Length: 492
Ligand code: NAD
Image: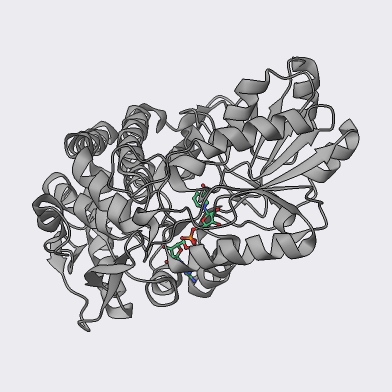
């Protein structure tokens, strides 16, 4: 801890407690776990490892707060969500510093995450008026009303790649809808969620938002299985998604939505504006921002044979200009991976790619130089001559490893793009919009960009086909997924 600035050291104080029922508490068992700095491989501080009894307390607190919270006018709830968004903006630097040391993401990018999260929270606050139910026509003397009512205790489980972003924006919709929430940040990156707890404590009545730290097998499992948690939302990996579906069923019949992984195609036709498309391939891979650790990364790049060589050349040059650096350096564009597991996984796939016969044309190693003597740094890596039979073309690596495939036939490339179990995003590049749209119609993916990549647009539903998930977020669909309808049929 000593190596950090006074400011960071101050932010780290009190992180051995979590927020349950409006109080800062340790785990009842006293158990804790270390969160590490992936850029130095050193320990940062300990946070509570919540056990079943702590989960029980959080559920009771959330349940206890539910009656009062749901009775508030939706606009009053929305005001509190917006107040939290404002607190985030005011303290953006603090959150960004914590995320940079905890996740390895660049501090500048993490400031951007705070701003984006706050915008999404305001968006959901602005949707409070959509909780309006409906009146349906019936024969004279009959009145059919459909009410929208919250579920009760919502569990929100989030991953490590955008810590404060997910912690903040994923609680907005359930809260506006009138639910109380238990948020569980990822075990790799709990710090910024705990920091957010300070403002939560000031703004919300006790128990409306609880922040419980811990791992998947103990804490996450207990939350999902608990018979009184009525609505589960996970952002995480496919295997975790499957486990969560089973665990939820063990605890009762629950509404579950899942935002899971991707192995997303970017298809480049020969008529593109090459510089723009090259830039989009880099941005789409999320080499900067989170080192390729993004569900939406366009990690399979399908280049038409006619442009393959020139495109790849420019892409290698552009990738070589990415400023890799320490996460706390404001000039850094690309930091390090979030954990040793992610680092080892990337290198396992790099070795596998070579063994499978793909041609390594960039990266494939740690970046050179003094700042990278330690830490989970991986240079942006590109494999050429990848075939769909290879595992690097089919499996989510969740690291800075891009697979380039060459194609000639339109139907064949669509078949290949669809030839994986995932279906989250896709990007299509051509000046022929009719061709682009027809291609989009045939792709099995929930979110498609034509002449773009990576960017999310507020209000436009985001979510996956196939194994990439169930449900849609970032839109009115997300808000309405946190209410159940009650139809009241009245004979007048
Ligand atoms: P992960 O699935 O390992 O963990 C995600 C969260 O689930 C963590 O908080 C973890 O503690 C918890 N968890 C793990 N096992 C659990 C269990 N049995 N019961 C309850 N909770 C459990 O994922 P990760 O490694 O943190 O993140 C990477 C994955 O997340 C990638 O597959 C990525 O594509 C996906 N992701 C998806 C989206 C999206 O919007 N679709 C966004 C970001 C990340």
